[in-house]
Length: 253
Image (tube, rainbow, N blue to C red; front, side, top):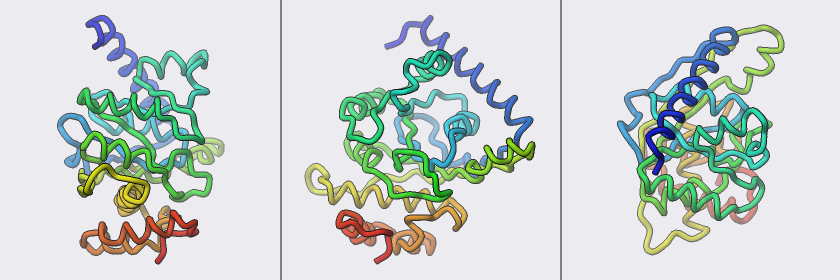
Protein backbone atom coordinates (compact mmCIF):
# COMPACT_ATOMS: atom_id res chain seq x y z
CA UNK A 1 0.00 0.00 0.00
CA UNK A 2 1.24 3.47 -0.84
CA UNK A 3 1.54 6.21 1.76
CA UNK A 4 -0.62 9.32 1.44
CA UNK A 5 2.46 11.26 0.31
CA UNK A 6 3.23 8.64 -2.31
CA UNK A 7 -0.33 8.70 -3.62
CA UNK A 8 -0.24 12.50 -3.86
CA UNK A 9 3.04 12.34 -5.76
CA UNK A 10 1.59 9.81 -8.21
CA UNK A 11 -1.45 12.02 -8.81
CA UNK A 12 0.78 15.01 -9.56
CA UNK A 13 2.92 13.01 -11.99
CA UNK A 14 -0.24 11.69 -13.64
CA UNK A 15 -1.67 15.20 -13.98
CA UNK A 16 1.60 16.59 -15.38
CA UNK A 17 1.81 13.76 -17.92
CA UNK A 18 -1.72 14.43 -19.11
CA UNK A 19 -1.05 18.17 -19.39
CA UNK A 20 2.15 17.61 -21.38
CA UNK A 21 0.54 15.07 -23.74
CA UNK A 22 -2.55 17.21 -24.23
CA UNK A 23 -0.35 20.21 -25.11
CA UNK A 24 1.52 18.20 -27.75
CA UNK A 25 -1.69 16.81 -29.17
CA UNK A 26 -3.15 20.29 -29.47
CA UNK A 27 -0.36 21.05 -31.96
CA UNK A 28 -0.07 17.73 -33.79
CA UNK A 29 -3.53 16.20 -33.82
CA UNK A 30 -7.07 15.81 -32.60
CA UNK A 31 -8.31 12.92 -30.47
CA UNK A 32 -11.88 11.62 -30.51
CA UNK A 33 -12.93 9.01 -27.95
CA UNK A 34 -15.90 6.79 -28.77
CA UNK A 35 -17.61 4.28 -26.50
CA UNK A 36 -16.85 5.94 -23.17
CA UNK A 37 -20.09 4.45 -21.85
CA UNK A 38 -18.31 1.07 -21.99
CA UNK A 39 -15.59 2.08 -19.52
CA UNK A 40 -16.22 0.37 -16.15
CA UNK A 41 -16.66 2.67 -13.17
CA UNK A 42 -13.80 0.93 -11.35
CA UNK A 43 -11.32 -1.91 -11.55
CA UNK A 44 -10.18 -4.53 -11.65
CA UNK A 45 -10.19 -5.09 -15.38
CA UNK A 46 -7.77 -5.51 -18.27
CA UNK A 47 -7.55 -2.85 -20.95
CA UNK A 48 -6.46 -4.57 -24.19
CA UNK A 49 -5.31 -2.40 -27.11
CA UNK A 50 -3.83 -2.71 -30.59
CA UNK A 51 -0.29 -1.32 -30.70
CA UNK A 52 1.14 0.44 -33.75
CA UNK A 53 2.86 3.52 -32.33
CA UNK A 54 4.97 4.72 -29.43
CA UNK A 55 2.17 7.25 -28.91
CA UNK A 56 -0.39 4.56 -28.02
CA UNK A 57 0.13 4.58 -24.21
CA UNK A 58 -0.09 8.39 -24.00
CA UNK A 59 -3.25 8.32 -26.13
CA UNK A 60 -4.82 5.82 -23.73
CA UNK A 61 -3.80 8.07 -20.83
CA UNK A 62 -5.71 10.96 -22.43
CA UNK A 63 -8.68 8.81 -23.46
CA UNK A 64 -9.39 7.32 -20.06
CA UNK A 65 -11.03 8.97 -17.06
CA UNK A 66 -8.81 10.34 -14.32
CA UNK A 67 -7.79 6.94 -13.00
CA UNK A 68 -4.38 5.33 -12.83
CA UNK A 69 -3.67 2.59 -15.35
CA UNK A 70 -0.82 0.18 -14.64
CA UNK A 71 0.97 -1.24 -17.66
CA UNK A 72 3.87 -3.29 -19.01
CA UNK A 73 6.99 -1.47 -20.17
CA UNK A 74 10.19 -2.80 -21.70
CA UNK A 75 13.09 -3.15 -19.24
CA UNK A 76 15.21 -0.76 -21.33
CA UNK A 77 13.14 2.18 -20.04
CA UNK A 78 13.70 1.43 -16.36
CA UNK A 79 17.04 3.23 -16.14
CA UNK A 80 16.21 5.99 -18.64
CA UNK A 81 17.10 9.40 -17.20
CA UNK A 82 13.74 11.00 -18.06
CA UNK A 83 11.23 8.24 -18.74
CA UNK A 84 12.48 5.96 -15.95
CA UNK A 85 11.17 8.12 -13.07
CA UNK A 86 7.97 8.97 -14.97
CA UNK A 87 7.21 5.31 -15.61
CA UNK A 88 8.00 4.43 -12.02
CA UNK A 89 5.40 6.87 -10.68
CA UNK A 90 2.98 5.91 -13.46
CA UNK A 91 3.01 2.32 -12.24
CA UNK A 92 4.96 0.51 -14.96
CA UNK A 93 5.59 -3.21 -14.57
CA UNK A 94 8.83 -3.91 -16.39
CA UNK A 95 8.94 -6.92 -18.67
CA UNK A 96 11.65 -8.68 -20.62
CA UNK A 97 10.44 -8.52 -24.22
CA UNK A 98 10.78 -11.56 -26.44
CA UNK A 99 10.35 -14.20 -23.73
CA UNK A 100 7.86 -15.39 -21.13
CA UNK A 101 8.57 -13.14 -18.15
CA UNK A 102 6.82 -14.98 -15.30
CA UNK A 103 7.93 -12.45 -12.71
CA UNK A 104 6.25 -9.62 -14.64
CA UNK A 105 3.10 -11.70 -15.15
CA UNK A 106 2.91 -12.40 -11.41
CA UNK A 107 3.33 -8.68 -10.70
CA UNK A 108 0.54 -7.81 -13.14
CA UNK A 109 -1.68 -10.47 -11.58
CA UNK A 110 -1.09 -8.93 -8.15
CA UNK A 111 -2.05 -5.49 -9.53
CA UNK A 112 -5.38 -6.90 -10.72
CA UNK A 113 -5.99 -8.67 -7.43
CA UNK A 114 -5.57 -5.31 -5.71
CA UNK A 115 -8.47 -3.98 -7.78
CA UNK A 116 -6.51 -1.85 -10.24
CA UNK A 117 -6.73 -1.40 -14.01
CA UNK A 118 -4.01 -3.04 -16.08
CA UNK A 119 -3.41 -2.02 -19.69
CA UNK A 120 -1.51 -4.06 -22.26
CA UNK A 121 -1.17 -4.87 -25.93
CA UNK A 122 -1.82 -8.61 -26.47
CA UNK A 123 0.46 -8.51 -29.52
CA UNK A 124 3.35 -8.09 -27.10
CA UNK A 125 5.18 -5.57 -29.27
CA UNK A 126 4.54 -2.69 -31.63
CA UNK A 127 3.31 -3.75 -35.07
CA UNK A 128 5.57 -2.53 -37.87
CA UNK A 129 3.19 -3.55 -40.66
CA UNK A 130 0.37 -1.08 -40.01
CA UNK A 131 -2.07 -3.79 -38.97
CA UNK A 132 -2.68 -6.41 -36.28
CA UNK A 133 -0.04 -9.10 -35.87
CA UNK A 134 -0.45 -12.48 -34.19
CA UNK A 135 -0.88 -11.93 -30.47
CA UNK A 136 0.74 -13.67 -27.52
CA UNK A 137 -1.09 -15.24 -24.60
CA UNK A 138 -0.21 -12.81 -21.78
CA UNK A 139 -3.56 -11.01 -21.70
CA UNK A 140 -5.45 -14.30 -21.83
CA UNK A 141 -3.33 -15.72 -19.02
CA UNK A 142 -3.93 -12.71 -16.77
CA UNK A 143 -7.67 -12.53 -17.45
CA UNK A 144 -8.16 -16.26 -16.88
CA UNK A 145 -6.16 -16.30 -13.65
CA UNK A 146 -7.64 -13.10 -12.21
CA UNK A 147 -11.16 -13.72 -13.54
CA UNK A 148 -11.60 -10.08 -14.50
CA UNK A 149 -13.36 -8.50 -17.48
CA UNK A 150 -11.48 -7.37 -20.57
CA UNK A 151 -12.17 -3.98 -22.15
CA UNK A 152 -11.13 -4.05 -25.83
CA UNK A 153 -9.82 -0.80 -27.30
CA UNK A 154 -9.06 0.06 -30.92
CA UNK A 155 -6.66 2.91 -31.65
CA UNK A 156 -7.07 4.42 -35.12
CA UNK A 157 -4.46 6.42 -37.08
CA UNK A 158 -1.78 6.37 -34.38
CA UNK A 159 0.44 4.64 -36.96
CA UNK A 160 0.26 7.81 -39.09
CA UNK A 161 1.13 10.22 -36.29
CA UNK A 162 4.92 10.10 -36.63
CA UNK A 163 4.92 10.64 -40.38
CA UNK A 164 2.37 13.42 -40.15
CA UNK A 165 4.35 15.18 -37.43
CA UNK A 166 7.48 15.06 -39.60
CA UNK A 167 5.51 16.78 -42.38
CA UNK A 168 3.80 19.22 -39.99
CA UNK A 169 0.40 17.67 -40.61
CA UNK A 170 -2.20 17.13 -37.91
CA UNK A 171 -3.60 13.63 -37.38
CA UNK A 172 -7.22 12.74 -36.70
CA UNK A 173 -6.89 10.13 -33.95
CA UNK A 174 -9.59 7.89 -32.54
CA UNK A 175 -9.88 5.73 -29.44
CA UNK A 176 -12.74 3.23 -29.78
CA UNK A 177 -13.79 1.51 -26.57
CA UNK A 178 -15.68 -1.78 -26.83
CA UNK A 179 -17.99 -3.49 -24.37
CA UNK A 180 -16.30 -5.40 -21.52
CA UNK A 181 -16.47 -9.18 -21.71
CA UNK A 182 -15.32 -12.18 -19.69
CA UNK A 183 -13.48 -15.18 -21.06
CA UNK A 184 -15.58 -18.35 -21.31
CA UNK A 185 -15.04 -20.85 -18.50
CA UNK A 186 -13.03 -24.02 -19.06
CA UNK A 187 -12.68 -27.18 -17.01
CA UNK A 188 -9.56 -26.80 -14.88
CA UNK A 189 -6.74 -24.35 -15.44
CA UNK A 190 -6.45 -23.24 -19.10
CA UNK A 191 -3.56 -24.83 -21.00
CA UNK A 192 -1.80 -23.74 -24.19
CA UNK A 193 -4.70 -24.65 -26.48
CA UNK A 194 -7.28 -22.84 -24.36
CA UNK A 195 -5.04 -19.79 -23.88
CA UNK A 196 -4.51 -19.56 -27.64
CA UNK A 197 -8.30 -19.66 -28.16
CA UNK A 198 -8.77 -17.00 -25.49
CA UNK A 199 -6.13 -14.84 -27.18
CA UNK A 200 -7.90 -15.16 -30.52
CA UNK A 201 -11.16 -14.11 -28.87
CA UNK A 202 -9.53 -11.02 -27.36
CA UNK A 203 -7.98 -10.02 -30.67
CA UNK A 204 -11.16 -10.33 -32.73
CA UNK A 205 -12.90 -8.11 -30.18
CA UNK A 206 -10.17 -5.51 -30.79
CA UNK A 207 -10.28 -6.03 -34.57
CA UNK A 208 -14.06 -5.50 -34.62
CA UNK A 209 -13.47 -1.94 -33.36
CA UNK A 210 -10.98 -1.12 -36.12
CA UNK A 211 -11.27 -0.23 -39.82
CA UNK A 212 -10.72 -3.22 -42.11
CA UNK A 213 -7.25 -2.01 -43.13
CA UNK A 214 -6.04 -2.79 -39.60
CA UNK A 215 -7.35 -6.37 -39.33
CA UNK A 216 -4.05 -7.87 -40.52
CA UNK A 217 -3.44 -11.37 -39.17
CA UNK A 218 -7.10 -11.67 -38.13
CA UNK A 219 -8.63 -10.44 -41.42
CA UNK A 220 -9.88 -13.88 -42.48
CA UNK A 221 -10.93 -15.08 -39.05
CA UNK A 222 -14.37 -16.74 -38.96
CA UNK A 223 -14.56 -15.62 -35.33
CA UNK A 224 -14.22 -11.97 -36.42
CA UNK A 225 -16.82 -12.48 -39.15
CA UNK A 226 -19.21 -13.99 -36.59
CA UNK A 227 -18.67 -11.10 -34.17
CA UNK A 228 -19.32 -8.54 -36.90
CA UNK A 229 -22.59 -10.35 -37.69
CA UNK A 230 -23.61 -10.05 -34.05
CA UNK A 231 -23.03 -13.75 -33.37
CA UNK A 232 -20.97 -15.53 -30.70
CA UNK A 233 -17.35 -15.71 -31.94
CA UNK A 234 -16.18 -18.20 -29.31
CA UNK A 235 -17.06 -21.45 -31.18
CA UNK A 236 -14.69 -20.42 -33.98
CA UNK A 237 -11.78 -19.47 -31.72
CA UNK A 238 -10.64 -22.99 -30.85
CA UNK A 239 -10.26 -23.91 -34.53
CA UNK A 240 -8.36 -20.70 -35.28
CA UNK A 241 -6.13 -21.28 -32.24
CA UNK A 242 -5.34 -24.83 -33.38
CA UNK A 243 -4.23 -23.44 -36.72
CA UNK A 244 -1.98 -20.86 -35.05
CA UNK A 245 -0.39 -23.54 -32.85
CA UNK A 246 0.48 -25.57 -35.92
CA UNK A 247 2.16 -22.58 -37.55
CA UNK A 248 -0.61 -21.29 -39.80
CA UNK A 249 0.13 -17.93 -41.47
CA UNK A 250 -3.26 -16.37 -40.81
CA UNK A 251 -6.36 -16.92 -38.77
CA UNK A 252 -8.29 -18.24 -41.77
CA UNK A 253 -9.73 -21.74 -41.71
